[in-house]
Image 1 (cartoon, rainbow, N blue to C red):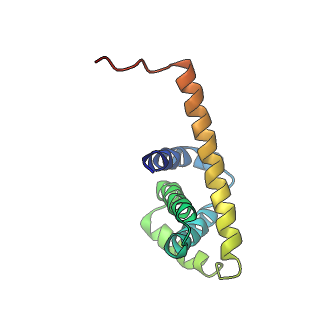
Image 2: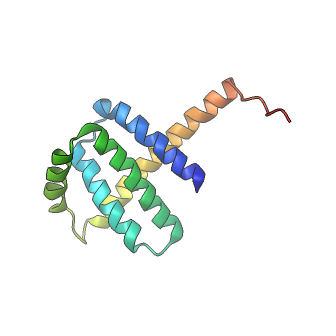
Length: 124
């Protein structure tokens, strides 16, 4: 759990840095926040619930790094009209895949860095 939270926080930071180069717009990220929050509340499977919670944190970090509070509010109002019970599942699936893809990328980078610059064991 701690590793997932740390990875999520790191991904939020990377998402903020990479945002201008990313083709995803703020509206897509807001939709991901909306559906992730719903699935985090209603999901009964612990793994899926945790994925929804982590996705919500990830996309919240992306949005708050790019938009002001009034812009976020306006986007939430606009995007909430485009999410319903029929498309919420597919939106959540796409958001989770995007989050997991970025998480795998960050883990790969971390592993590469660790191999090239291993941390020496702590002295006792």
